Every structure is written in structure tokens, then in C-alpha cells.
Image (tube, rainbow, N blue to C red; front, side):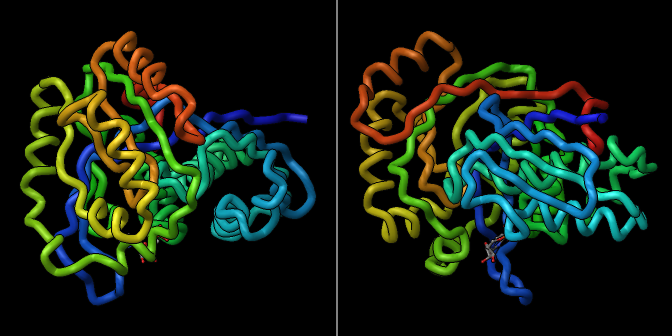
Length: 288
Ligand code: C5P
């Protein structure tokens, strides 16, 4: 039986500015996002109905976002067969790394291949937008400038490789809670994130921009602040919160320096990895 295997990469936010609150309850953002080598593995086979099984059993079943991705794609294209989706979970959950969104986007890409659909970028994008703010980005991958709710995505040039030490205190954080704790004073005009985007376009070395969600995250989850304080001396000016956290990242342009920083952290934190930027060639993804 044919089977499709895909890597669903995690993302980090190198900058995340919140411009303001929208009428629909979401926020307008300007962010630079990048896919990294840390990934879940998604295996898809034909089956009757739709089934989702996960290496962490509590994440399987209809509540998984991949289940919704499959059912919406199936009804949009009027498909009679179903699919069995197996997720090998490596990306921490509710950690600001976009794991659930990436799994959902990989499912759309994998099923379009398995069912041999004539699905263009725009077809998959409109389903991705229904699934969540971060899902469209994963149809592009690489380094992108994100605007609006998260669904206005532009691929940037990003030839410079970089490595990240990622650590988190293993406390799951609900994105909605962090956005909900924003104050008016956290809103900015998006120019710092756009500047960072221009830097990528010009082939400059990556940098870190501001993240508006850092203050509310640290107020809600003191363990995230402690984690940040452990990483910051190892990468001064290059330490950041990914998305709504609580994952903290430190940027390095040399792999050996990232590995040394990880060793320096020892086993004081529950979850620490080194990951590399992951930039698929243009044409390899449905939208880029
Ligand atoms: O779109 P998604 O389901 O990933 O968003 C989760 C929550 O994060 C939303 O319910 C909302 O509270 C918040 N959010 C937001 N503005 C965005 C994206 C997410 O307020 N642009």
C-alpha cells in the first residue's frame, strides 16, 4: 500500500511584533519566522475513514489538528477514501515551536500527494488559514516575513546557515493566554521585524529582534524567565523567546559554539536541543 513520509519541521520566531488588536479577537503581527531541523515525522497511508495515531497516545484521535486538516481537504476535493496518519512526536507541545501547525500543514501536503489532487498553493492556503494562524507559513517554510493575523506570508532570501540552542522548562503554555495578557504598551509599529526581514534579503548575518509576547509570558510563567536568564549569558544579545514560548532560543553562526553552549547548560533544564536553520529550495514547498 502506498505510504507518504514527511518531516514536519518546527519554527522559531526571530522577531515578533504585535501591532494591535483586531476586531475578530486576533492580533495583527509582524514577525520573522524560520523553519529548523527539529521535526515530527508524519506517515500517511490510505484507509477507511480518517484516523490519527501519535507516539504520544494522548495527542491522537479527532482532537489532533491533522484530523481536521484531513477532513477539510477530503470534503473540499470530494474524496471517498480516507487515511491513516501516524505522528512521531519530537517537537514539544504548546511550546511556541509550531509543532501542531506544522503537522497539519505536512498532512495537507502529504494527502494532496497520496490522493493525487490538483491542489495549488491557494487551495491549500485557504484550508491552512481555517486551521490556525501559523499553518499557512508551513506551506512556505524557510525564512519568511509574516504579517496580519499570521496568514500574510512572504518568503525571504536566507542563505546564511545558523544554529540554535533551544531550551524550555517543560511547562505547556496556551498561546491565547499570552496574547490575552498583552498591554497596550507592548504594541509597536513592526519596523524592527521588517528591518530584520530586509537584513535577510540582503544576505546579512541573522540577528534577533524584539518579541512583544516576552513580557506577558514572563509574567505568567516565571520558569520561562529563569530559562531565559540561564541562556542569555551564553549568547548575549542573541537570546529570544520563540512565539508565545516558553521555549527560549539562542542564536549561533557556528555549530561548535552552539554545541559548547548546550554543554555549558548541563542538565539543569528539562529539555535542551541544538537545531539548525532548515531552508528548503524554492519549488520544494507548495507555496514557495
Ligand atoms: O490561530 P491560532 O489558533 O493558532 O491562535 C491561537 C490563539 O492565539 C488565538 O485564539 C488568539 O487568542 C491568539 N492569537 C492572536 N493573534 C494572532 C494569532 C493568535 O490573538 N495573530
